Amino acid sequence: MRKSFVITAAVAALVGLLSAGAWLSLSMAMHGFSARAEPSRIERSLAAYARSAAMPASAKALRNPVPSSPDVLREAMVHFADHCAVCHANNGNGQTMFGGGMYPRPPDLRLAKTQDMTDGELFYIVENGIRMSGMPAFGGGGSTDDSWKLVHFIRHLPRLTPAEESQMEALNPKSPDEIREEQEEEQFLNGGDSSAGNAVKHYTKGHNQ
Ligand code: HEC
Image (cartoon, rainbow, N blue to C red; front, side, top):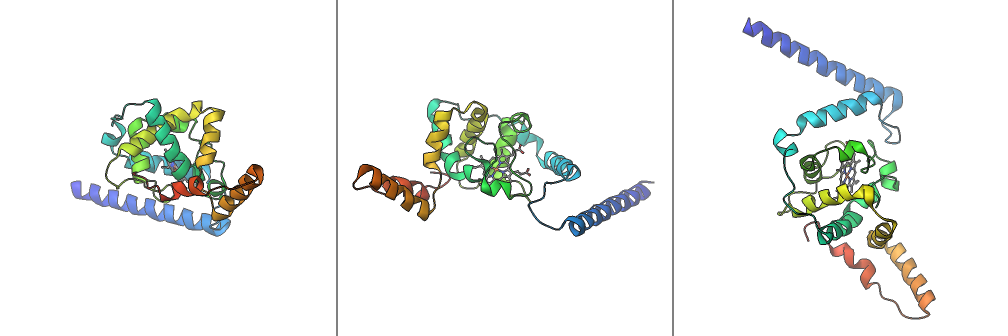
């Protein structure tokens, strides 16, 4: 009795896997592997289900051990502008060049789908990334405080002010060409000397610094 149940379950799992594989190959054959397409509704719900099932219940229940304060928010804002905005945009809406070419796209972090997650879930995603998506894992470098601070900042995103957004623009990583252009502009406007010191400073900044 027990043995036949195990066999039925194994066959059902195999059939499930084969159908998922067949569906994936068929969809690839029909639509190609371009990341420019939008994920279909089935893919989105399968991915959301898999992610929620794979998230340990203990992670969901974690509380943010770092108290929020203006300094903590400021630090996390600088961090987000440097490490996250390239895909998520400074205001979290995900409308960036990189984000637009990803499959799946980075979601708008200000909306309920993200904001309804627990602090523990957001922390777990920042620390561990999301497999088979462009979302990298940022943990593993020792202290987890930076990721908890980022959780506070993600909560702050729906209330980000235009002034904060423009402060972030100044902190976004820049290509050597952009740095040169800015220097030239500055020199032109000042009619004199300018230094690249500020513009390149954030290149040397690591996640845990
Ligand atoms: C290289 C691009 C990239 C970078 C850099 C990046 N992300 Fe992401 N992120 C993504 C993508 C793509 C997703 C969507 C993944 C998915 O839906 O499976 C995502 C998803 C997320 C989510 C889950 C949101 C949700 O509603 O599902 C959070 C939270 C998040 N990112 C936070 C961050 C933070 C904080 C940083 C910086 C420390 C960061 N990301 C850096 C690409 C990126």
